[in-house]
Length: 173
Image (cartoon, rainbow, N blue to C red; front, side, top):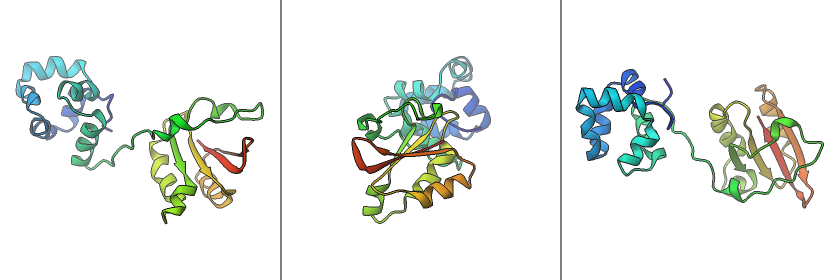
């Protein structure tokens, strides 16, 4: 079972009983989970996001703590940059790139930091939700990256930004 913020507490504890002790250690209000009646009734109704709220915690931190404990990779938070990127739309755009991206990778910035954009993309692709996409921003045509993700059977659409012709928008889904 994959642990997410939407996972029901009872499902998580059934799949990973050792997490009960972990939850109790994370926040004092969670010690009530030791009560089997409370755990059965409340646990079946609430997800981990709600549990985090009750415990006064950030939901993503709680989820990632539990995921680490059972050996699952951390879920990455949606980038704040996504909210600040205006995606110019045209009639030539494929239908699958409607809406906002699930993930944003600024390839130009990664290269300036000495990181490889494809590494970050490959890290995010397994977390990509069905019918969502990752947006790669670069100031160069990312042909090698496009080729690499197409070999992974991913859909790719790339275009230049009409407002900034030196910027490339590459949609991967």
